[in-house]
Length: 147
Image 1: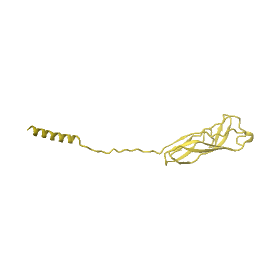
Image 2: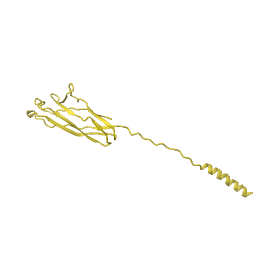
Image 3: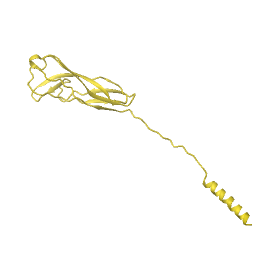
Image 4: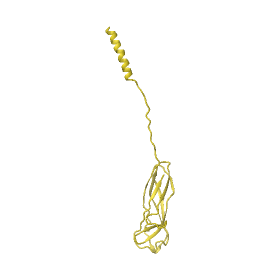
């Protein structure tokens, strides 16, 4: 009889243990979304020293501006008229005198995921500063990059 009870108990534990150890599976969905985005660093467009007694056209280029956009993202670049513009004409200003200038900003491009240098060219026309007073002239243009 002891043998029958032992076999019955062993069978009962096997059924209980088999049920407690049953395996199951489920899926875990993993997602991420890469967004189209851009960032930009500014720079300086320096015309250098201007000699009003020899007021020739002066050009300058800045490659310190960088644009970083998501790989494959088309972007546009733009700039405002600056802090001292009048009727759409940009001016450098020293507080008492101004010098007109122009800039050329590329229209845009396509992001690579890495920082890309952007060349911004500036021009001061000949004879546009021959009556300028001595001093340091400045202006600030707000650049924008849009994906």
